[in-house]
Amino acid sequence: MELRLNTKKSIGRVVFIVEGQTREFTLLEYLFTKIFDYSVVEYRRGKEPIEYYRSDSDSNSQIFVINTQNSNISSIQRGTDYLDMVFSTLYEKYKLDLHNAAIYYIFDRDPQSNNNPGLIENLVTKLTNSRENDIELGGLLLLNYPSIEAYLINALVKKAVRAAFEPGEKIKPYLARNKLYQENIKEVNVLQAAFEMLSEFYLHSDTEFDISMLDNFGEYNLKVFKSEEETFKITNAYSILSCLSCALIDLGLIEMIE
Image 1 (cartoon, one colour):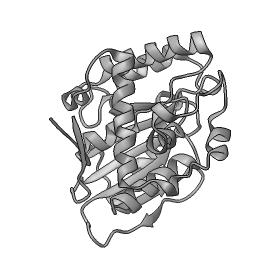
Image 2 (cartoon, one colour):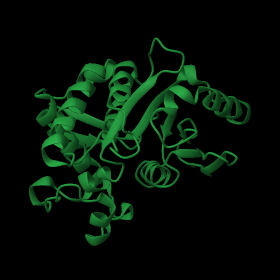
Image 3 (cartoon, rainbow, N blue to C red):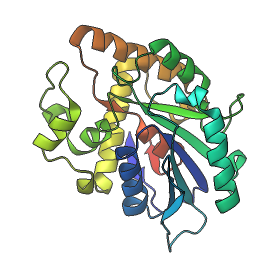
């Protein structure tokens, strides 16, 4: 399997709904402005939406990064009034039409803050496609184990040479100790993160990843989630995995070539 970046693809309007106030914004903004050169609008809770970056090369592709009412994954269900207000504001200011946008939820499987596995199971089986869902606000839920910082590790350190995590070790000190910064990410690292994700996906689902799975990702998302939960029970730590690359594959920015 060969992976290839398509940095010139026009992707229209894309919405990322995230939980955090800092890292999710800085990482997504870095990827979509430095690696791909798309316009980015950010809407952080408690602040007005701003145009973070305007692309001179592609006026038709626009990324919206929005965080939920609070950092708990339950805010996807309980914060609908808040999200309705956010999207109303974005429609008025930027004419964002959700019916013509890809929507991704990027959340952490943090056992401390997101400690309701039953709710997460329910959400991964409902939020299964970035564009077509039978619920009012659809989208594709993509989890990070244990947090969004897993993407940095997937991108910058190959698993084969990665220093093993001690059970329960915090990921942020690991990043600092090994000087793993998002500014180190280049095109080759975006591909490495995708390769690492595909390898972990097979490990946890016993299934070779295929792009067609993203049309209805719930079954596969659930397999990975349950496997990661078993890993945590045994080792007190998750196998490092960020599913963010699924969004890049789904959008055609990473092409899978047989």
